[in-house]
Length: 284
Image (tube, one colour):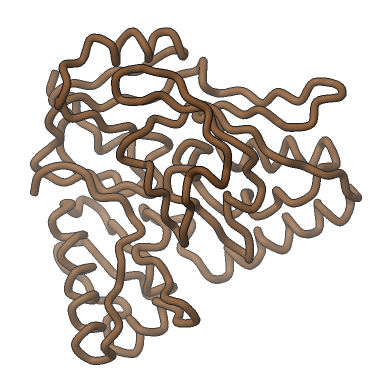
């Protein structure tokens, strides 16, 4: 009861979960869901890299997937790689490297977990989850297990329309073999590019807003003069204006406010309406 969630997010800000539960495996999660009354609020937390927990806390139950959802299976002769939803994107990219599997290099540049990546169709460096995904195993909010093929999900740009309805527990990925040296070189390129352009050593949550068609959001925010804007230790990054930074002990309300100020200014001065990419949960 009243479990503080701030330490579970990369922004290190936010309030309490009314009820917090760490599900150890699929059976444990199903058992929990079957006991939750219909209409009770359910939220899932992954690695917390793309998440803003509001200061007023979260009603209902907040669930974090435990060790039983952290695995990568590629048996001899199998056509797909099966990966648990709690597995980190970086871990899968490293597994692919060691197995000489190509096409997963972009995951090395996306903080977070597989479940979170599916929930928002995460992407970077020219690729996104839908490009490598074959199917997902998910649970409905009442614990019923379903399998969904890639084309049944309806992915859009940084969008999964089933995110609010399903809890993603496993993904199966298509794969093809490549040359290990080329895979390693691509991962190194991504690492170098990310270090040079993103505030990776700060308390941040990745891209705040989704890009619009051929418009880069950071350029729009920069154009309206919001680069580096700071409010009570909440800052729009000087290095990359589409990143929010917690300079110390910023409150979630301040982080959200500076982002909304930038969003309003971009709309007023350029006509472009920015869509939040960071997931915001809880009461203000």
